[in-house]
Amino acid sequence: MTRRRRDERGALTATVAVLVAVLALFFAVVQISLWFYGRSVATTAARHGLDAARIESGTAGDGITMANQFLDQAGGVRGASVSAERTATDVEVTVIADAITVLPFFDVPITVTIDGPVERFVE
Image (tube, rainbow, N blue to C red; front, side, top):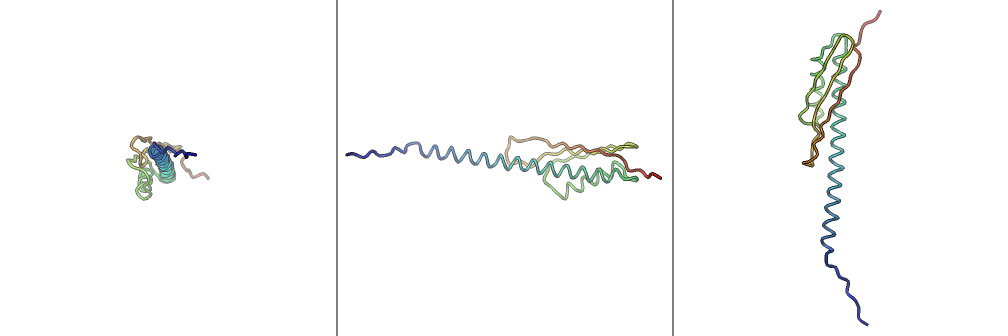
């Protein structure tokens, strides 16, 4: 009887294809995680800005300053811009930023807007 030898031509190509797919999946998961972390940082910065701007003696400038201070301390986003608007009854703080990227084609901006009432002294 003759033994048939197993043909292993193309095995390296299949291994490389699987490795590339696993690495692509890994980096995609890391990129999505960085985007969600950046969104969390932007949301927290907007909340800090809202808290500073909504107090009775607060201004929109106070909210912008507080949000920018938080963004500088926390990191996690790049190119962040903060805007705030305060009326007699409402405050709105918006943070626009980009997530840190590890994939060159993943450029989804982060935009968070939080609003709330201005605190008032009531007798």
